[in-house]
Amino acid sequence: MNFITQMITQQVAGVAARALAPRLGVSEATAERAVLVAVPLILAALARNAARPEGAKELHQAVNEDHDGSIFDNLGGYLGDPQAAANGAGILGHVFGEQQGAVQNSVAQATGLDPNAAGDLMATVAPLVLGAVGQTQRQNDLDPGGLSDFLDTQRQQTEAAAPGLTGALNSMLDSNRDGSVTDDVGRLLGNLFK
Image (tube, rainbow, N blue to C red):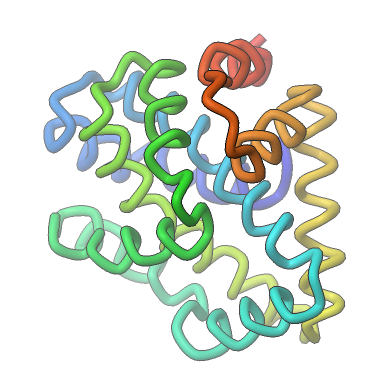
């Protein structure tokens, strides 16, 4: 498990799973599992975007301005406010682009959530991921290149835990084909839990 996934999981193990479960209408275990599926997907997409110098610069600036990690200071308040995820929806739109729906459907299939609940969960989790990235960026004084390298390391660790995940995500994000990759993503995400 990589650093950011572990950091968020430690938060989810308590207050986050309890807060998200009733909102999503699922058990705490299902909420935690869904977060464990969503975090690596969001991280892989961030790493993919930050692999381009202009993408790294944009992400570095966004994290500097809006995601310093302070979200973890009042996690219960954030998770208890359904409107707080509105910012997360914008993050997902930026990170996944027009393939956001396909990614949400993949998370839904992999976790047993309905697509709307998967979208809500991902929108809630996205600011946590960026908060963890921001905390790391600030603590390690990372410039855009350093941030890109850090995210690439996180992506590689995720890839090692679930071989093929990043490739499936990249094909989903890059592809204009009509072929479905949701089964592949569900299978690959399942590898994270073995």
